[in-house]
Length: 298
Image (cartoon, rainbow, N blue to C red; front, top):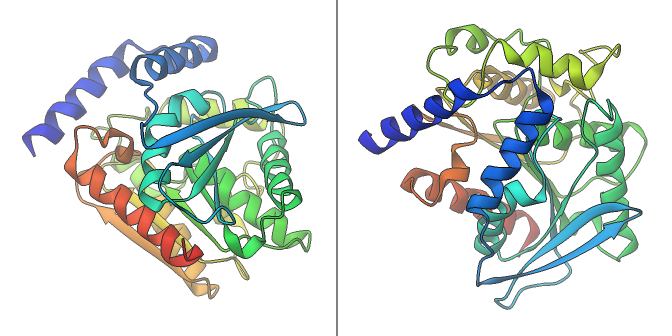
């Protein structure tokens, strides 16, 4: 617990210096941290390419694996920051532990590209996999924070457009309610080290513009959740967005969705990315990998 406290303190120290109103600076700072801690696992190989002009990258385990199975992962970053580079270390671990080929994309970011640009790019990446002869039942979706919102929003879009759905999805602290009506948004403001409550409405508006914040493809909590594939969620109790996960999971269960959720006491937003120093993060990543493997038969 001392280690967890120290990491929270360090994150808050950095957070206090951040100018969340300046998207360009936040984006540049995220990329700088990503470059500093970017490492490429010796147990994976990496193949960068483009999908109709969109940057993409395969993270491919070197261990023998079934090339017919794939994880399509969407990074977080408030819809305005983050990239393949910022998330490569963490998702390399998930790909290696699950022993599954993993595709990441640089979807279009706000404010230059507002809703529904990320959903369109997610569908484009999914269509790419299908054109490469991946079967829907052999594909998993995944994402953290805003990427978790993209994951769930894209599932709803695919269902509503009578498209085949992937086999399952994993979500790490998904942002499911852009109106921030969950009780944890106010209750956890003082203990959340990663996110700033004051900034969240600004970033939501930055993404949505004049669009309805309750649009289910942007705020999946407000959607009809019937017919979605199995979903596994991880979230911490020290999060602004704790209720985004709890309420979505409860509503999904009511709709008959096979949803599982693990709640980590005292842990913060997307703590799994700190796997290099937090044993609990490593265990959480193993559970994510085990879920993917069990669902895909990887």
